[in-house]
Length: 218
Image 1 (cartoon, rainbow, N blue to C red):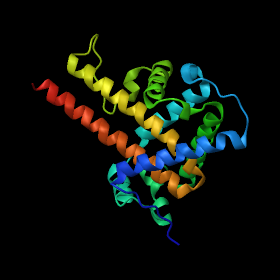
Image 2: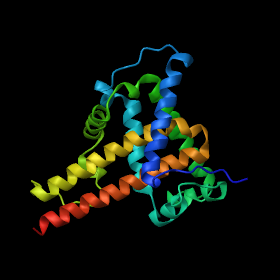
Image 3: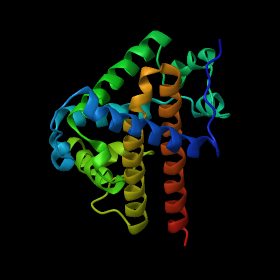
Image 4: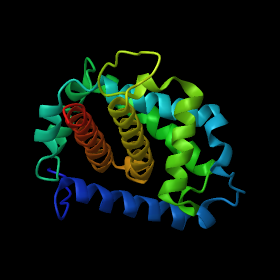
């Protein structure tokens, strides 16, 4: 049987619909499932669990082997079981079992984070600032670049623009993946949401590089 979800207004806009819906699910369950005082995200960059999540998401993005295949699988805004079973090739795993194991690990981390933090209580800009702090906490900025950078004592202005743009996009994608977490209980919908977030990061990151190249030629 083919399981599929249709996304309106194109694949990327559809991702935001899915993510908004999944965020709403978490918000509705907050009171009924457990009465826990949520932590503030002001210090989330110091939380080893969140650091682990951010690091694993960075590695997942960097591990993508075939963006052409990913785009093809998600091009019509739906995915079948057969297509889902090809996702391991996109991310460079040896087989589908390895991919599903890593997927479940990430999903469990995100569920734990939602139990600790009420992400719905914060604006996207507040969440983005928290993620950017985490980037600085766990690693140097170069690890989040979408292409290698020759490090000098100082970046030129165009390179500074590119670096900041890439980091901003990576932070946005990190937040998008958190929004996908509610859909992870259904493997098909979950990988569709996460896959679309990956494509957003790749496309927006490429635009950062193009803007920097244009900057350097003007």
